[in-house]
Length: 632
Image (cartoon, rainbow, N blue to C red; front, side, top):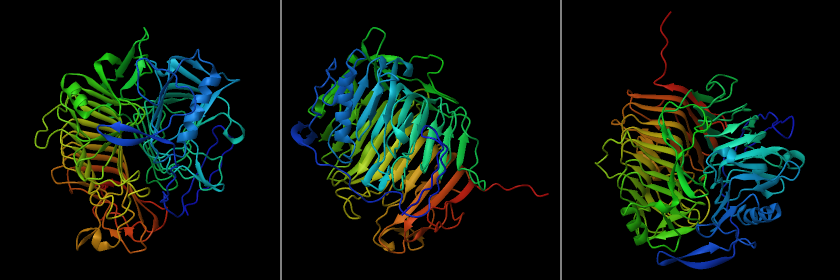
């Protein structure tokens, strides 16, 4: 088992130090609960939907679909508390459940220091403010993610996936004992915090439960913190375009990009934390978000792109451009794919409300500058072996807030951006994917050759998690089959927070020119039954986590890690974690980690760096090509 030692001086923002010893970062477990279900029609097929909480649903105008709760500060706090607690009670352990929820707060103040509003965020739950600025919605209290306890003495956050919080201010208050006056966000992958102001102490680790307390996140963007953040047991984390006031420690790979008051780079320095810090970001754009304008009209705000940016995009009072909600086609799981694609072709944008969408054909984004926004983790599952979504006109398109599951018939791809061989230039209007997540297996059997394929140029990938499931339903070497997580063929593609895990061949293949990745996290597949089943050739055991091909010139990467846990008790090896051309690339802060199991990753990049064989101890390469100091 992995062991973490943590010390904190007080319950609000005590300094935590953490050390990993041995064991798997994620245990192959199923934490799903059995939910009451009803049958609904979805694109001509059926899907189980979780019953809503046993409290009155607060009406939204216009209708935003089942599972959406819109709160007003004039409502009795008891009613709000009852609703958010009921959603949390249903979702907090429902890892592969069918419920999908959005908890939306109109501008105003909720709770008081003496009577705080405090609640948990469970699976497939989006919590968001509806203001033009984070300060328009104020929560006096906390919005928390805690560890899950498998037994009373075994509590961890390793599978705290698929939830989010955005566009509000938290004045930290309330809580009892160890959890008093601290905002806890103990999450792992696919749990973004965006556009949030936290006034008070924060912790990314739930140090108030018994057991190992492991966590494997994560992603924070466009946020500001007045108090110090406890990193604790978080293996890796990306903080992008934010403002900090202290960061406690690091485990393996903490990356800060365009973040005010970020710690200085110390990756690879003996006795120092594994920090990689970039003064500013390249091309970025924040995620679109639902809101209300000054007259109370529903809008979707679309932030502009920024280059060489530092800090949040709202600190100076900037208000993002607003599209009227009337310009969006609002779809539910009952809406036909034909109606969705006609609306997109006729110039409408698309808002997908919470639920599970079983698709007989792909959603086709057929015109430039379209916005496709998911609310409450809508989940798209192709049923006929086609893609779930194809961006045919990749100029100025925004796609955000989607969970895409592979279906039972193998798809060639799950999401295509651009058409093969027709990349073009879109530097003045890049396409941006924000918080788009993929699963191959887990909730059920699924197969796909490639999860995300980027054929277009000038694309920003802002927080992607592509996951071939290592636990759940439909999981096995010959069951949830998938070759590659991400394939990039377009030029000038940038990724911030690229998480790709467990695919059966090279997990990321990058062939476009002038590409970049800021913070990459990978786990090689757990389950190769033998070496012969998982090798490129007799002389190349295994597959790389990421390969930059010969055509992918001028590639830059920062903070890139790959971990191994081969769990069949067979001597499995990967020859290298990263394979790149000898020239035309610049990589910084690379690492491999042996989690547990058997075998090893034999080198970090192109044969450089030793084998990762000591559990929990990273093998680091500071830069590639290696720096050569002048003689003398």
